[in-house]
Amino acid sequence: MLPARIGTTELHTFPVGQDWLARLATRLGIETGDLQVAYASDHGAAFVQMYAIRAKGIHAAELLAGLAMVAYPSGKAEVSAKTIAGRSVTVINQPETANRLGTFYAFAVGDTLIVAEAFAEPVVERAFQALPAT
Image (cartoon, rainbow, N blue to C red; front, side, top):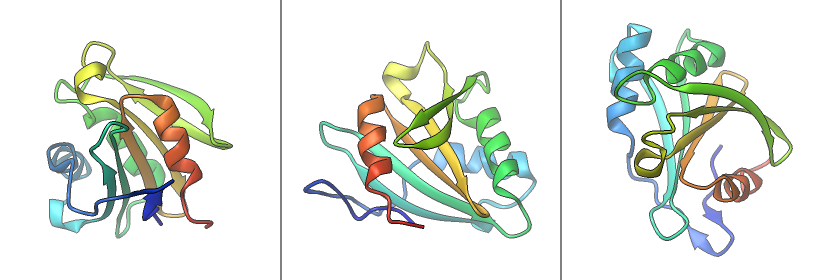
């Protein structure tokens, strides 16, 4: 469900975001291992980390609500809606840490939550445009 490349940049698939994924699992009352997660990231100049997340018996809307509560260590975040790359996206941001931790952009595809974490919205737009057709 995630792109293998953004433009000419090949994306990495090693696990990232383990801190907030652990907080998400705890929030949902499940073990971290019960989250099924795929990864695609570029840690170069365009920094973006992408995730496709699902968990048996948990709807994507629940995953999104949980993400909004745990994306940042303090648990405090601003949540808004925006259209990016033609998709209705939930934006989860903590202005005081965004320059250090990035901003989360998420939307559901069936029972899967697609998330991009980045410092710049144009990077997210290119990442979402690179998603395979679903």
